[in-house]
Each structure stands twice: as C-alpha cells, then as structure tokens.
Image 1 (cartoon, rainbow, N blue to C red):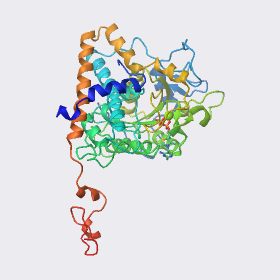
Image 2: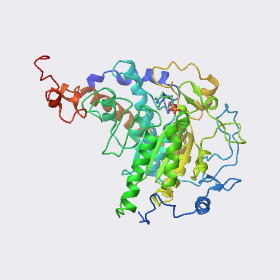
Image 3: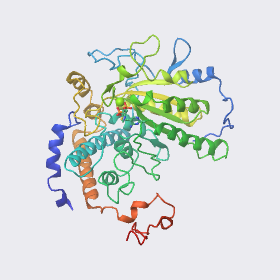
Image 4: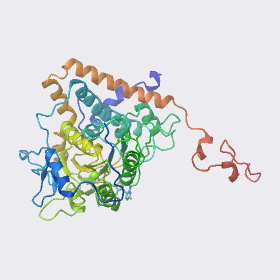
Length: 444
Ligand SMILES: Cc1ncc(C[n+]2csc(CCOP(=O)(O)OP(=O)(O)O)c2C)c(N)n1
Ligand SMILES: [Mg+2]
C-alpha cells in the first residue's frame, strides 16, 4: 500500500516550509430543577467559583475560576493579543503525570501533522470544497478534550478535523472523509466541515457558524434530564462546544448562554479567539465591555450568571487546568463555564485564502508562542520524556498520519446507492430504485 503514497513523506517536507510554524518541525444525583429557579443562589455560585480559586469582579461577578496571573506579558504584543491581567497562564504547580503529558504531546502533534498532510493532499487535488485547518490552535483542542471522558460530548465548527481526532476518531477515517471516500467517518458524504461520529459522541462539524453552540447545549440538556428527571445516575456527561471569536457576535451564542445558565447545563463554551473572522479583525467587529478598550469575550459569561475565564490558548497546560475545573463544575451540577482561549491560526482562514491581510509582525508574535515546541521542551525539562522518547513519539505520529493517507486512498468511492441515503425514508415512493437509479420509464 505504501507505494500508493510514494513520496508522501518527501513531499510533506514542502508542507513544512509552506505551513509556517510547525512543532518540531462520579456522578451525584440532584433534585430536578428543570425550568425552575435553580437550587443555588447567584451568591452561592460566586462563592463556589471563588472556592475553586476564581475571583469575583468589583461588582461581585465571577470573572475567573482558575488561578490568575498578575504578571503582564513582557514582550510587545499586537493589539488584542491579551496582556490582560485576568488571563490564566500556566501555574507551575499544575502538573500532569508522565502518561498524560505524553498523550498531550502526541495529540497536539497528531493535530499539527494531520493538518499539514491535509494541505498537501488538498493541493494535490485529493479533496475538494473548503478546507479549514487548525494549525496553531492545537493546545485548545488537546487541553480541553484531553481533560474530558470518552463518553462526554464535543461540538465543533467547520474547523473540525483536529477536534475529531482529539475526541478519538481515527485519523484514517477523518482523512477518508476529506477524500470523499466510503470509509470516511460519514461514509464520504460529509466532507471537511461535517465530521460526525455518534460512536465517539462527536456531534459535528457545522458549516454555519454558531450551529454547534445550541446543539452542544442540547446534548448537555439530555444528560442532565436523564440524570435529574429519569434518575439515571450514570448520565453525568458534559459537553464542550468550540467556536470562534467572530461567532460570538451571532445570536445563537447569547441565546444558548442564557438557556444553559438558566438550566445549569453541564456545558463548556470554548471560544477559540484567534483574533480573526476570515478577514475581519476581532477588535473591529466586537464591542468592548464598559471600561475596556479591547473586546473580551470571557466577560460575557458573568452577564449570564456563569464564570468567564480568559486563558492563554497557546499553553496547553493552562488550558487543561481551566478545562478540568470547568468540567468538574459542570459534572457536579453547578452549570456552564465560558472559556476564552487566546490563540492564533498559522494558516489562512481556509486553504483557498491567500492570507494577505494579517501583518507579518502579528504572525511572528504568535509563531514564537507555538504550543508544540514549547511543550516538547517542557517534557524534556521536567523529565517526563527523554529526547529519544520524544523522537519515538514523533516517528509514531508521522507513521500514523502516513497510514491515514494510505487508508483514505485505498478506500473506494461511495456507490451511487449512497446518494439517497438519509434523504428519503423510502426512495421507491419517489420513483427511485434502491441503487439510486430511476424507476421511471420516462427516465430509464
Ligand atoms: C451563519 C453564518 N454566517 C456567516 C458565515 C460565513 N463565515 C464562515 S467562517 C466565518 C468567520 C468565523 O470566524 P470565527 O468565529 O472567528 O472562527 P475562525 O474561522 O476564526 O475559527 C464566517 C462569517 C457562516 N458560515 N455562517
Ligand atoms: Mg476567529
């Protein structure tokens, strides 16, 4: 099979140059409170967030659930890059064990290398339609999804390949979906923006911005309903919905924050603030809160009665820590958290975007904060892996990505009979044969 991909590894080197920065290269049953005043008063919510290390703002509103760094960034940062003192950065006392640390590195590397390979395959004509890559944002997906259980739910956006991979969807199935092949995770019928896997509780993949936010709340609602109303103690799953800064100016965001807070749904609203919505800069499109010069999204959480946290989204451990706290909060029935991750995408909006609007200095600033080499260094410095072990992990991921392409390439194209699947309950009623052909004598 490998011969099919002769040169894929070699060509990937082109990707390295073209891709910009690249890393190395228990449930508790609660009384039902649906549609009723919540069992905790607002002041108790503030108190509980404070007990978790958060802090209340001047008006008593919660602005963070995790420890907050007071140190300002020493490096000059582009406008909106967040030297906000509320920002959670990595707390050196937060540690993960060896196994978790290696899993974090592997997951981020899978994300980066998978996307680099996608770019290559796209330009080789192996996939079609819009393809949005996640390079640069890996610490967000890995930091949040790595802290979740496999039976928790995730809702993504059109930039969804890496979320799917972090959630456990095999890379071969994601690549095959991108190739439009039968063994794709949606049998080749979804494509780049519509990854979905019921088996992995991965609920999409949405082309319209903001679609995943209410869908995520729905998944959280059903878990809560099963536990609190139907008495299923095992239904303590949480749901993380990921979405961008631009999406936060969409009505679905506000409507869902309201409902999720009202029903104390076990949701994590994870904003991937990469500063841009296609070619629209975040600070040109979003109104700042009173008293602020820059628009911060996390400050919208307290307006809906939930904690809002701003975290360095280029620091996987900082994200992981915040995610762990928000997941614990959601799982024990204390409701949603809004997490704003400051991050950056290293490629254009999509592979069709020439990416001419963003300034080189801005790109440079975030290139220096690449989460992958930073975490590699941390692994070695902290004695979590040796250089040799890290190289072995890198080789393992390289091989996995290679195999994903081989798998996708070997998979057949969907048959004609698949065309009408999930479209009509009974195609024959529409004069359509089971194989997708026509039953009409007028259209043989
Ligand atoms: C409802 C809707 N309106 C407009 C669009 C067009 N659109 C596609 S991506 C995008 C920008 C989204 O930016 P952001 O939320 O910051 O996500 P990012 O691409 O930066 O990850 C827009 C407006 C869309 N897909 N759906
Ligand atoms: Mg954005």
